[in-house]
Image (tube, rainbow, N blue to C red; front, side, top):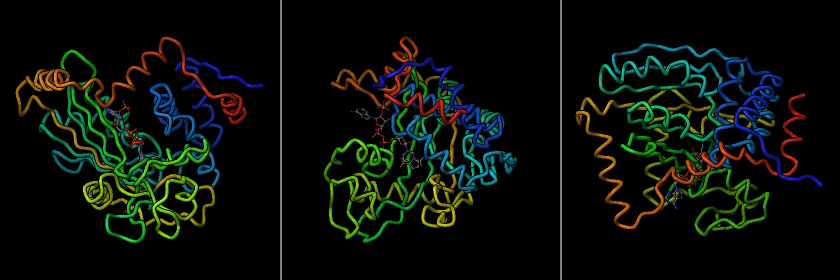
Length: 336
Ligand code: NDP
Ligand code: PYC
């Protein structure tokens, strides 16, 4: 009988990097994806941790994405960096543009990063959190694959389209939220189907457009709904416009992976806005953020977005990262 097993962060990162390299990724791309995926697993971001490895590998086997792409960074304007990810992953594109983007944000006060021709198959908080750790404010959006019905519509148009935000806060780790604009992330629907759980009410519709809480009905020809009705729908539309129209990437409905069975990674775009708060609010931003958090805490808030993740991170760094029974053996087999 197999049991849960525990690895350190660096053991998991190294194992995942080996897997990515074995399946065609260049060492540089493998290192970035492995750190991202191991970080999600460490932080308990289950829908985008090692659960995603099967989808990465089927995608690589399908030839849908270039796992050795070398992103082309373009210095477009004093406040704009563009990157052609060359049909590769978005995170290596961000890594390639990061120092220029930070330099522009610090000198102009604000800078925009527009990544196009890219695949994002991960959580978005790892993209924004490091900027806040350096005292900057960051906002990022990425669009995914058509599986969300706009409010009032009868068929899906939008992706699950997450928004992530990070800001420094005095005396504590940065304030970070990262959320799909759909009622649930698609990854959580897959996990619910695997584990046999119902979805919350209002999460999705079946193939005939009827409301359903059955994750299999959503996956089998059905679709998700935006969170919060027309409000989430408007945010999802905004993500399509910023992540695709503004960057030169595909809308969620525009790419066709039918010729690539096994492909799972959306071929879209990503936008990031980075602001240096010292240029607008002097050096008081982090202290003002602390004042806000203090008011929220005194008003009864006992969990801020990101708190659970940071608690999980501390526990994982102390006690190791726990993998479900059979998971380590599967990862080791993929690494052979
Ligand atoms: P959740 O609904 O689980 O969480 C959204 C945010 O709310 C998180 O910052 C979370 O913090 C916070 N939060 C959750 N519960 C509470 C609570 N009770 N009180 C206060 N804060 C809370 O996220 P989603 O399911 O919407 O998204 C999951 C992931 O899927 C995200 O990382 C997202 O980027 C990813 N995703 C990626 C896509 C892509 O195309 N690459 C597409 C769609 C989603 P905490 O983390 O600390 O729990
Ligand atoms: O969980 O919705 C999701 C998702 C889409 C692409 C990567 N993750």
